[in-house]
Image (cartoon, rainbow, N blue to C red; front, side):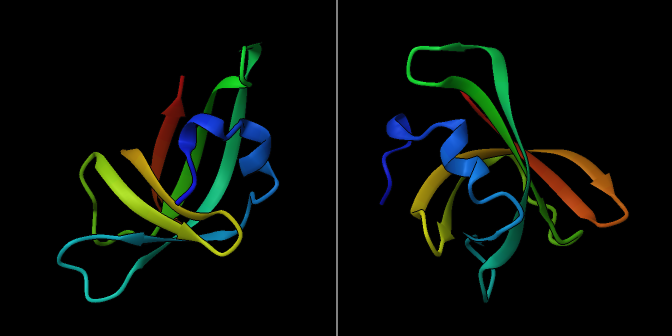
Length: 99
């Protein structure tokens, strides 16, 4: 599993538009999420932080804010705290903030 302390916005930007699989208790199969936005602070601190990520998933199920295990083909397994932020025509968006 990747250590989130070592990851930067650039690490995720390299995989923008790719699919992550979210493992959720009660779901028969992982829920696909697409990384749709990577935003780095205009004033990066030591270690390349802060930054935020926005993922888009299906409209249903609507997941509450919580820590979830995401798996990515290149990045491996990541435990990330996600917060639902918007519902649009394409699905439900979740944000992760790294300080």
